[in-house]
Length: 301
Image (cartoon, rainbow, N blue to C red; front, top):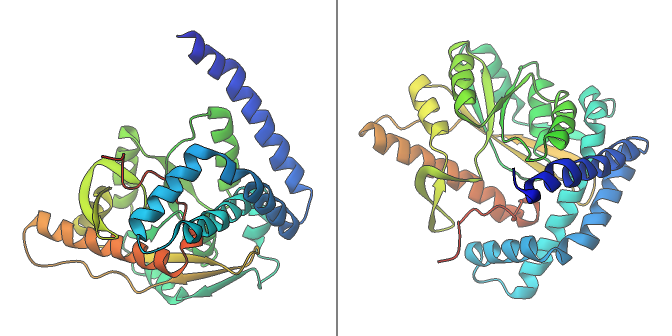
C-alpha cells in the first residue's frame, strides 16, 4: 500500500467520517425544515468555490442547454448546490419522514400505479434519477405498502458508506451493491418477484450509447434487459422539491411501453431511448433539481 493510500485510509477517511457524523447528528437535533435550510445555505456558500465540480456542472449544462448564457448556467448550478445541501441534511431526518407525521410534507400523484405494481404478482422496476431528494421516491413507494430494494454504489469511504446505509434503512427493505456479486442478488430478487428502484442518470462505461439531450451517452442497459426479460412494469418516479423547502411532490407515471417488435437489441435500444427521454424531460422542467456534477457525457474530447 502506497503512502498516499495509507494516509487516505487511516487519516483522511476517519477525519471525513468524523465531520460527516458531527454534521449528521448535529442536524438531527434540529427540525427537518431547519436542517434543510442549513444544508442548503452551507452548500450554496461553499459549492461554487469547489472549482472541479463547479466547472464540471457548467460544462454539462453547456452540453444540455447550449442556448443558455454563462450567467444562466451559473444560476442553475447555484440552485443545484442548494438542493444538494438540502438532500444531505435531510438524511438526518429520514426516520422522521418515514413516519409521515405531517401529511403536507409529501404529496403523491399517480399512487395508483404503485398500488397496481404491489398487487400484480409480478416483479417491477422503478425508474428514478438523482433529482430533488431521490430518497423521497423510495419513501413514497414503501409508504404505499410495496417493499422496495435499491441498487446502490458504495461510497469510497467505508465509514461514511456505513452511515449512509444506516440512514437508508428507513426507505428501503434491502440494498444491492452495483457490482458482480450484486448482479446475482438482483436476479434472485427479480425471480422472487421483488421490486427495484434504479438511478438511471449516471454514466456506465460498459453500457449502451443512447441519445441524451441530443448526444449519445453510455447508459446502463441492464435495467432494460431486466424489464424485457421479465416483461415487468417500468414505472417512472419523479420527485419535485417545492421551492426551497423540505416539502415534496412525488409523481408516479404510467409504466413505460415495452417494445414488442424487432430483435432483442433493437427492443433494448428503443426502451433505453424512452428511459433517457423520460429523465431528460424531468431535467428540462426543473434543471436546478438535477445533480449536474456527474460526468454524464464523459471526458472532453
